[in-house]
Figure 1 (cartoon, rainbow, N blue to C red):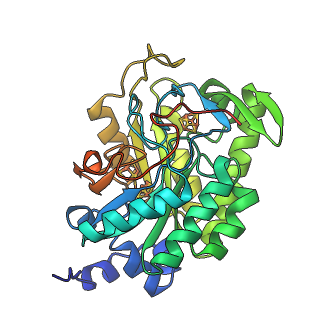
Figure 2: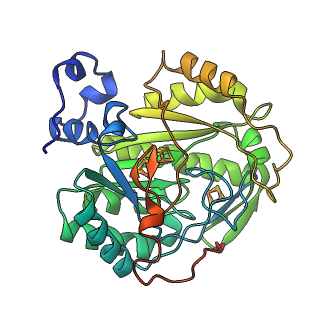
Amino acid sequence: MKLMDCQCTRKKNRTINESAMPEELLRQTDRHPCYSFDAHHKYARMHLPVAPACNISCNYCNRKYDCVNESRPGVTSEVLTPYAALEKFSLVKEKLDNLSVVGIAGPGDALANWNDTRDTIKLIKQSDPGIIFCLSTNGLLLPDHAGELVRLGVRHVTVTVNCLEPETGGEIYKFVNYKGKLYEGSKAAGILINNQLEGIKYLTANEVMVKVNIVMIKGVNDGQIPDVVKKVKELGVFITNIMPLIPAPGSAFADFPRTDARELKKMRDICQFELRQMYHCQQCRADAIGLLREDISHQFRGAVAGKDSPTVQKAV
Ligand code: CLF
Ligand code: SF4
């Protein structure tokens, strides 16, 4: 059965940032289960876990597990080579006729594993030019790779931006490993934030639908979240996804309180006056498959030969 969407309400409710995007991209976005609330009941996404390494250290992350910027803490995903990812994609596509999106969301950072990420995008695009390719990153290497992402035809990118102030970032990030040098504290955060904003600006100017994830950490960045939303809206971002801090065992923030659901909703409600908000994120695994609320990844785990399973993330 072909799934149809009503375009009339969509057109009426367009934001300025949406109106700047081509019609075809808006139609694609209507079939993206994370970018569109209506789509998440109908369309499935599949994550290809080809990116185990990370180049920063978030204090809420336990690096034995998936990237917390996109996933629930304490989840480990298998890791695949680009060819194994293609094989798995073909298997899943055969079984899921509502599959609209293929994404890379770790288990580390997609851009910190650039060769495997790029090769995976190329293989999937060759195999199915119509599939929506999505990618999630901490943004450190966006200035290096955003141009190629655009050339490869990636039109949906998520960047996690937790704050705009380097001093606040100094409390959130333990270190940043940038171009072979290790930075700490506000200096590290300053480099990261600068690259995130520069990368987002480039992507939106080149017709990429950018989603910004923000991890809400009470007493650390919660007071600054409306400013982050305002700033990324100015940069052309389509939607923000304010996520709860779920303290990961073994992480520096392990003893921090989990973000209260009511406070999270209140923050989203405040920010939605500025920019479209995501309310239906499932903080899914780096190898998630299916509808957002019906993960069927277990049915496909081990279906193809990968590498290093379960994952232990490496710093680059
Ligand atoms: Fe995956 Fe993320 Fe793309 Fe979605 S997830 S890379 S934008 S296809 Fe979606 Fe999962 Fe929430 Fe992410 S529910 S964690 S927002
Ligand atoms: Fe962990 Fe890296 Fe993701 Fe931060 S960006 S949560 S350090 S994997």
